[in-house]
Image (cartoon, helix red, strand yellow):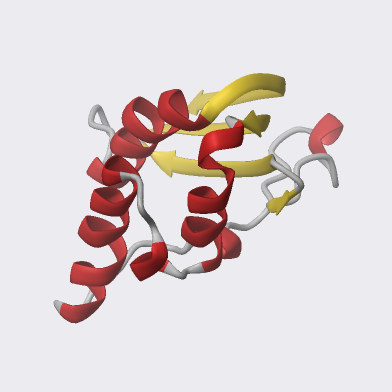
Length: 124
C-alpha cells in the first residue's frame, strides 16, 4: 500500500532571506549567501547534478490539482517576497530526503508568514 501526499502553500519569505531565496528559486545557487540555503542548494542541485542526478528545481515545480477546489489555485511562483508552490510525493512510510529537508529545514527558515495552505493525502 502506498501513501500519497500533496502540500500547497503561499508564504511570505522573511525580508532578510528574499534575495537568497530568489537565487534558490531561479537556480543561481552560487550567489546564495545564507549557509543553510547554500548547503541545501549544494546538496540537492549543484553536487547532485555533478553526480548525474538532481532534484526538480523549485521554479519547475508543477501544479497539482488533486481536489477540484485546487484547480489553478497554487501555481509555483516567486514574486515580491511571496512564494506559492505545491509539491507531492509517494511517502511509502518514508519521506524522501529532499522533501524532508525542504519541509523541516528550509520552510521554517524562510517563512515569515503562511498566507494560505492546504494538504491532501490518500492511501492507495
